[in-house]
Length: 532
Image (cartoon, rainbow, N blue to C red; front, top):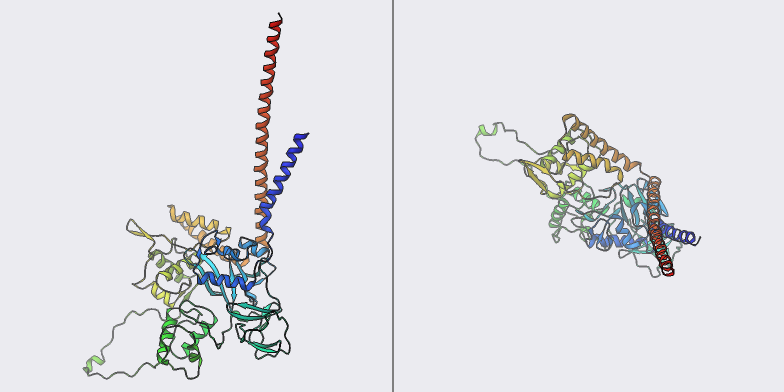
């Protein structure tokens, strides 16, 4: 009876401890910071050049969910961070004007830092990245982290500026009279003055000088107006303000590239040309000089001289036919994720030739093609967007295209060793990865190879559909199933260990009992022999 009580007590203790270990991550800790604090933390990670380390969650070495966890604690992985969120919404419907929101897509999370910009830890090759919403990542949901507190009404300091929140969002393009002082807020929500009392959370006599965007997501797509103390934009910057700079440079005749909100080499050269024409310091940095750029007196680019030069040439030379020359593609070209045509097949074949694409050309522009194009752009000093635009297309099919440096030569042929950035992906990619591995390493017949190619194509399409169809409910169900399974495994192992210990104990006791019996028997025999 005593033994049964001891065993029961041990089992209950072990079950309690195992339940805490398994399900402890399902309960978030209290708020350990603010939304603005998380946004500043993420920006500092980008500016400081933190490395991407799978499973990392300490300053300087983080993965996507570890970037959030290193500041706020709470849940360690992206799916539980979304599952335990206090509020969620669809990114396609707009993102609220709130600093430090979480961003989620299947297998990946990031941080929204306001003004249509986000920060995420993307992979070994990229580290921590900063770019506009809608760029590399196709985010599905925004969410408020349970481990972070967010301002409802009142002042909030972020990145050296002050913002005023009403009904859970900071206000933009408007003015407020607070404690007798009138404050103006630009399109990014920045206050024109430093508040004298940041604890004040009420406003009186408010007057609007523009359309108030509180409760909307216009900040993600609107252009920024220049302020008295403009921020600095340079090569590598992105966002709505960069898009505005590009458009103004294009209007003045300095820029003829895509107005995409990314400050690349072409934008830098155009801005230098403007600075030279305006008599400014030529450094390619858009700081205070933007005031001149946006002014009515901004100089236009010099017009090209189209007057034909008169030369003394024989009359027969002026009428001689000219030979046709091969010119690069000049019409608008853009191929991206989801496209499927013969041109995509040609692009994939060229990527295979250069060592960036490690599978057969299917004609479908999926995630693997996106990564291969991004790697090619990175090696060829192009904007790493994963989209084949006109510039990328011409570079890809030029004689000067730089091949993948991470390739091996096997039997006189280039065997690509694609270095793709490790991105956290859902488990549904397992089948696709298996097919790709077999396609690369096995020798199939013509029929089997055709089936494998179609399987790759189908898997890539299925992955794209799953990204749009996945919901937090499904994610939560999978997570709970994994937790329950792990709990049962733990219980089974612990019970097996306990049973083994008691088996050894009983065996030892049995052996000892037999030893005592034999000893007693020998003593009885010796006593009888002595008596007789």
